[in-house]
Each structure stands twice: as C-alpha cells, then as structure tokens.
Length: 251
Image (cartoon, rainbow, N blue to C red; front, side):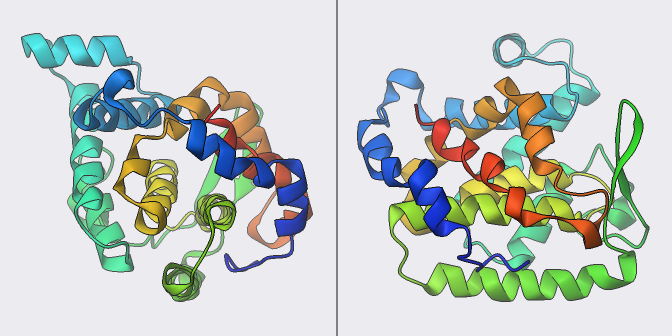
C-alpha cells in the first residue's frame, strides 16, 4: 500500500468526500471555540488521552493556572504541546517529524531511542493479547524512505480539499501500520495527519478537533485501524471506515 494510492478515492467521495468543502465552509474557525494556543493544548491532551494519559483537558488547564501537582502525565502532555508548536512553525518532512518525536517521547523512551526509528520488533496489544504485528525492524527504514518520498510528492501536488483529507487519513493509517517507533506511533500519526492538512490548506487547520473526535470515538478508531493481524496481511479494501472519521470531526 502506498499513501499516494487513489484506489479508494471514488468510494470515499460517495461516502463523505463530496461533503468536505461544505463541512470546511461551515466549520467555525473563529476563537469562539478557543484561541490557537488553547486548541493546540487541547489537541495534545486528547491525543495523550487516547494513549492512556488520565489528565483531562479541564484538569490540564487548571494545572496551567495553578502550576501545581506536576508529574509524568503533565510532562507528557507538555512535551507533546511543544512538538505541535514545533510542527506549526516548520515544514513537514522526515527530519522535522523525527525532531517532533524526539521532543514528545522524552517521558516515553530512553534518550537513545528518541527521534529514531526502532531496532526492535513491536506489536500492538489489546485486551485479548496481541492484535497486530508491525513490519520487522530491518525493513522500517526502507518503508519510511518510500513513505516520505510519496509524502513529498503529495505535498508538491495541487490537491483539492477532498483529496487533502483523503490522503491525510491514508497517511495516518499507513504510518500507524508501519509503526516506525518503539513508542509514540499513535501520537506521531495524529500529529502528522493534521500537519499534512495544514501544509496544504493553511495554518487554520491546526484548529480542527481531530484528536478530540478520535478520543470520543476511541473504540471505533482502534477497530477501523485494525485491517489485519500483521503488516503483510493488511486489507486496505476495508479502510473506508477509518477514512470517514477525519471529516466527521468537522460536524
């Protein structure tokens, strides 16, 4: 599967893609939902919550006001906020993504593994045990080289709004399946998705509540990412359920 794949675009348009220009037009980009800084913090909190962080948005904002009860979970969120802020001010490319990972994985990994592709075999575990086995570590660099070649191609292409959302979701999905880091893959995938949209449609799109929506729909989010038991048995013909999620965050 390549992230430049248009095989599912027509199905996507019929399902939700044709609604996207109107959803964008009707979406409230004003500060009624919060200013840019607040929404960045919100993105980082919800993305952290998906990975098991127990600090909700209200608790984090109260901490910001009072600066008390700091701990690992607060630090984890603050590191991710810093990574979002870096992405908002830099071009999307491989080196900058690795730098973001280095920043936000400070509490997740030992120093030697931050901002670097994994050298270990990794799997994704659910309540019933192993749910997915990612590609072997010796193939990660090759897969990521192809991934960023395709990503560069997409960024340099003239895409319409529907295509941007379609490819952003494919980028998120494929990155999650490659699982290139020892830890922090979900956070990186969600950051990457929004970064790609903003790179193509403008900085205002950092404001969309994708992470909040994924948290709200967490069970469906994980179920729809699960397209196979391992990297070699992924069935992307079932990817539409996942691709539909991102536009729905605008509703």
